[in-house]
Each structure stands twice: as structure tokens, then as C-alpha cells.
Image (cartoon, rainbow, N blue to C red; front, side):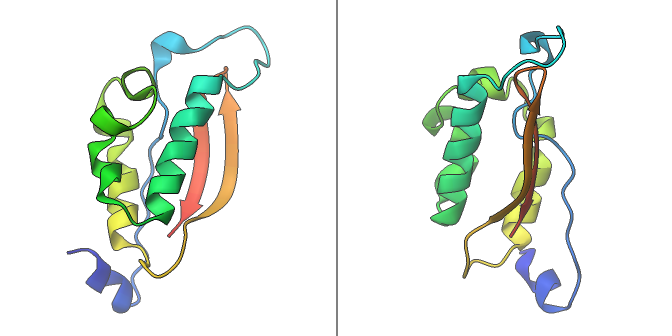
Length: 110
């Protein structure tokens, strides 16, 4: 339903966070990325590249889903951008970093 907006030349931007669990953050300086946070984002990107509807079933399909996304409001903008994106190509990661171990800062173009 959102893809026609792209065809009309409109840019759809989703601003949120793929991994957003404030209880899991490690506040002590520069913490290395947590393996579980990276695994969740890797899964999300691979399912997006395959144009799989599993992206919307992350709660039951993705590794560490409950830890990575305790509530969906920060992930919802990803779905909107994904839905409006180009299904012909793979998503392009423009930026990817983790703060405090697990706070995912990732910019993806679809």
C-alpha cells in the first residue's frame, strides 16, 4: 500500500530503532556491541534482503527477538520504510553502530 508513494517520487523515512532495550544497555563508557543485538539486526537485514514476510513475524522467528525488541514502537518505522521500499533490490546499510552495547543505530535504504 505504501509502494505507490515511491512511484510518485515521495521519499518515505522511518525513524526508530531496530534494537531498543533500555534495560539491557551498558552505560560504562564505550561498550562493544552485544552479540545478541548484532544477531537480531543481521537476521532483520537478511530477511529484508530476501523480501520475506518473516520481517513482520520477528517475535516468533528472529533470534533474541524478545530481548532486542521488548516493545514494537521503535521497530515500527522500519516496517513502514520497508513496505515503501524497492522490492527489486537488497536493502543498503548506510550506517550501523551500537551504543552502550546494544542500542542499534542503523540507517537502511530500501
